[in-house]
Length: 432
Ligand code: LRH
Ligand code: MN
Image 1 (cartoon, rainbow, N blue to C red):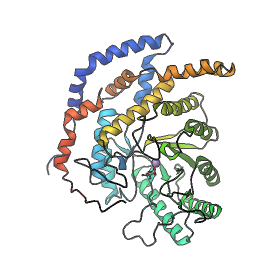
Image 2: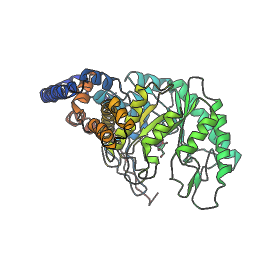
Image 3: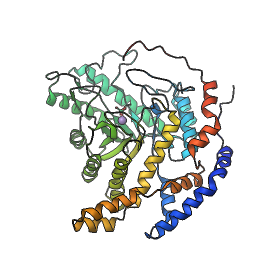
Image 4: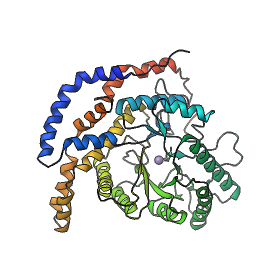
C-alpha cells in the first residue's frame, strides 16, 4: 500500500525558521502599541490559540455554479480523502479540528473505521447536516416540491426519517448537534400556502426534535432565497427564531452570512438572537450579491468584525447559555480549497481577536453620551489594528505554520495528491 503524502511537523518548523525574525519584530512592536492601551498581547495569543472554527467536509472539494465546475487536481474523492485534507489544514492553522459532515455525501461504510481514521488525525465531528434538497439514489419520493414542509405527509415522513438517521449516525461519531437547512419554497405566487407550509415544517421538526439526545442541539438555518426563487419556507431569522422557540430549549438559530439580502445588518440579527437566547451558531463565508459562499472576510471584513464585536461583547458580559458553534460554509470554485479554508479560518480568528481590542468601557461611555464620533472611532481603532503577528505566533506556539499558504505551497502537497488521486474529468451536459 503506497504511503499517502503528508506534510510533517519538521517541514513546518523548518519553514517557520525562515520567517520568524520579522514576525517577532512586528510582534514586539504591536506589544508596545497594545501596552499603551493597557492590553497584554500574551492574553490575546492565548485567546487566539484556543479559538476554534469547524470545517465543512463539502468545502474540501471544488465547488461550482450551474454553469460549470473546474475540479482542482488531486480533489478528494471520498470522506477519507476529505479528512486527509482536513488533517493537513489542521497542521497548518491549528484552529480547525472539528469537521461538519453532510449526509448522504459523507455516508461512511464503516462508522467505527471512520471514527478511528479521524481520531488518528486529531479530528472530531461537529454538527451533522441532513440533505433533503436533492433526490438520492434508491429514494422513493422526490423532494422536487419540498421536504419537511411538503404538502404530502409521505414526503415529510421520508425527510423526517432521513434527519433521524443523520442524528443516529452523529451519535456514533461523537457529534453533538444537527443542522437542518431545507430549500423548501415556491417559484411562483400562489404555488404554496405560506401558513400551511410552515405548520407542516414545524410538525416535521417536532418529530426530529424528539430524536435528539439530551445533550444535543438542533440548528435551524434560514435563507432568503435559492433554490426557490419566489418564496422560501424558512426565509429569515424571525421565522427561524419563532420555530426554535416553538420546538424547545435544544433548538437554536444558525446564521449563514450568505443567506441574507445584500446590506442586511447581520450583526444586529446576531445581537437579537443573543438577547433572545437562541443563537445556535454560524456558517461563516462572504458574498457580494447572493449566496456566493466566498471566503470568509474576503469581501466584507468589517461586517465580520462587527459580528464578532457582538459575540465578544456577549462573551465578556457572560450572557447565560452563550455558546455559539462556529463553522465555515464555503464553495471553492477557483481556488485550492485547502488554501481558501486556511485563509478563512485565519480571517475568522482575526475578527475574534480584533473584537477583543474594543475598549468597551470607552464605548459604553460614548454611547451613553450619544457621542457617535467617539463610539465609531473606538470600534474602528480595534478593526484597524493589524493583529497578524498575534495570529501567526499563536499558530506557531500550537505547532502550526507562521505562513500557512507559503508552507502549504512549498510542501508540494497538492501536486502529490494529484498523483495519488487521479480524477476523471466529467463532461458537463448543459446548465444544471
Ligand atoms: C445552503 C447551505 C447549507 C448546506 C449547503 C451545502 O445554502 O448553506 O448550510 O447544507 O449550503
Ligand atoms: Mn450554510
